[in-house]
Length: 159
View (cartoon, rainbow, N blue to C red):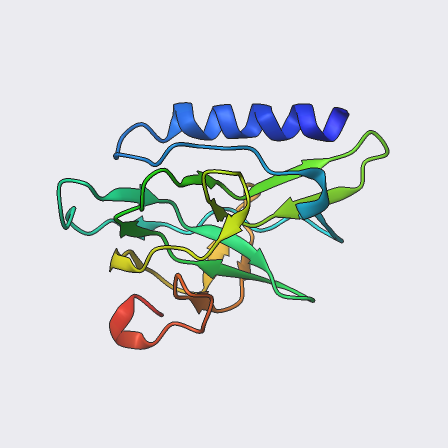
């Protein structure tokens, strides 16, 4: 129960904090989607949000993706979500024992089942592949990924 409560709280906070751009309807992750990770991701990368491409487009924030041994940044994007789909934003949570889990951003159909994402209309630009943590220490953070999860190229926001 503790993980599900935290998952709902994270989804609510993400919806409240991200009101600057139009966003899709949000839905919660299930506990079966949580993947144990050995350490938390670095701080978020700074993204340059391109102009909104159309009136129905929603913004999906960039997110950290666990790649087996390290984190990679999946760039944010504008998309026109098919109705009545919803989105579960990526989340990072701990259980009562302190174990760290991550769930990736996931689009869902009307029944709450994962569904392929809509194609990105415009993708964010990102800076370098290093980030500075809260203590001012610079650390490498892996590659930039396009919204489809493949490695980003230089012309599409990749560093």
